[in-house]
Length: 143
Ligand code: FES
Image (cartoon, rainbow, N blue to C red):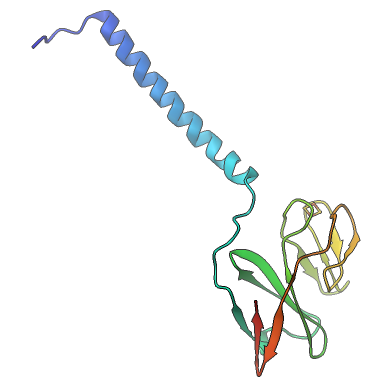
C-alpha cells in the first residue's frame, strides 16, 4: 500500500474538492432565487375551511389559508359574505384590505380590487379568484 501521494495526485484531489465545494456554494446561493421565482405551490391543504361567523365583522377582512394559499373572507354588507383568493392576479403578491377605502390594495405594484374582487386599477389583468362560501349556522364554510 503506497503511503506517498505524488503532487499530481494531490493537485487532482484538491481540484476535485474545490470543484465540489464550488458546486455546493453555487447551489446554496441559487436556492433562494429559485424559491423566489418559482410559482406558488398549487396547494394541498384542506378542501374546506370553517371559520366562525363572529370572526368576519361587517366591513372587515379575515385572512386565512385555503389549500396552502392566502385567502380572505369579507362581509361587505351585513349578512353578505364573500370569499376570495388573496393572491394578486398580476404577479402573485398578497393583497391587503383597506378598511377606509373598502377595497384591496396590492403592495407590489398598486393593483386595486373591489370587495368582490373586481379590478379597480393598476396592472392586474383579471379579478381575484372567487371561492365558494356558505353560511351554516354560525359557521362560514369555504370550499
Ligand atoms: S403583483 Fe399585484 S399589482 Fe403587481
